[in-house]
Length: 599
Image (spheres, helix red, strand yellow):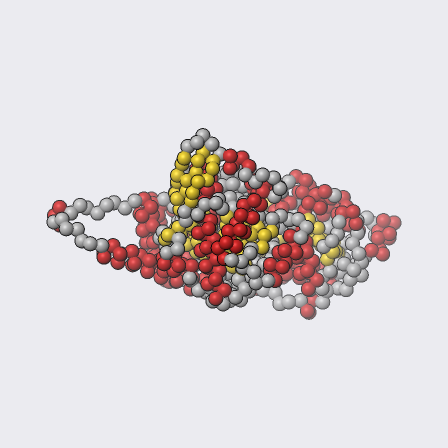
């Protein structure tokens, strides 16, 4: 790959006129570069061995893609392969973040470069720009790329598929580059726009799939202690709303229903005027306190909201519940980067944001999240959860609170899934897509068409289940009860294996307590012969019992074989079909129980 014009003839007047602009910055010193992690060393060796024009690296958020890319940049600058570096990032804030990280290792990048500047100062090795900048003036960046032998680092490369303008702009601007390094830390997009410079291979089903040259997934990083284990605390509850026809409807969040009803129950739960959000925020703050008191004194929390109006309301709720103001970042505007940096360096408890911190932003102390948005594409979900997984020291864990919505539960259960970009595959609408988030960035009436369909009346919250390593733990527990506190009080410093053991223990204790309460109830006074047979279990009770049985069998196999719980669950899904256990039907759970007993 990497065809196209390499640039003007070395002796041309155009190049001679540019010689005075060649980089005067000092070549980075490789011996002072920080030590690389194992996956970074392996990928670096592979890159240097291949010496190809294009290289795609997929690594889970928090794994160190930036460090890896900057090491490649330093290597190529040092051996003269390239004379300049251009980094393309999704947002203005990430431009600043890239420039700061590069400066720490001796690579000087101009984060203030604008299209009107045409050239960077000789003090810099190159510049950091956004995909939007490139899309607006690709010829400016093409001329810069042709002037000097250039390495282009395309951060979160899936953004080059956001629109034809961005994709065509990236391709036109950087075809003349000597080297291109594509990075991504999240599942690829679910659209059919080919991503420039990414390789595609046709599979047995006839569909084209993206091919990465280096892959380092969440499960790999968790095993190596590079990322934190993530506990998902899913909250259900009763919701009531009024339709635009004046009808009042009620539904239990998380129960099977049509997509429209799921959307309206979900939206009702997220209403700041109801009881669901205050109860969940109170629980999340309690979890944050536990982490701060047990090994993570500066732990921070992030609430991800759907729109600006609701984000402000959540911030007021947090202040009422905790007595401390929350930092609020509403959009990618001037001053947002400074607010994020201030929060990252402080010990403030809570940050509320719409989309600003959903991708790439580095706030390592974030350890508790509240997923209070209706955006639910796999890409967006992975970006959001990626804000909490960055490990600083051994044993740190992350906790994310989310609505008990089947689609979200499935995404939470598939944290370890690796997704390629598939072209031509039929697409199913999954929850709400990024259109809702795009609308939320505008300073307009945030209610939109969705809210016109109903008015939220009430919502209550209860802890439905805890999802970890693809398995579901616990039974329903009302907010504010000792049963809920047992899960909120899990120690903050645990290994992945310790998390599994403790969750299994908590679930066993919860079930034992339920049996004791049942046994303590007054015995029936009627003769035994005429005693009524026990009431049949509801579908919800049967699912809980079957999930518990399945988890126990998976745990037993884990102890016999050493395989991670998530891989055992994934193998059962491969053999039996169906969604993750958090969404599986009674019949599917029964089939998996029978299957795991034969393994």
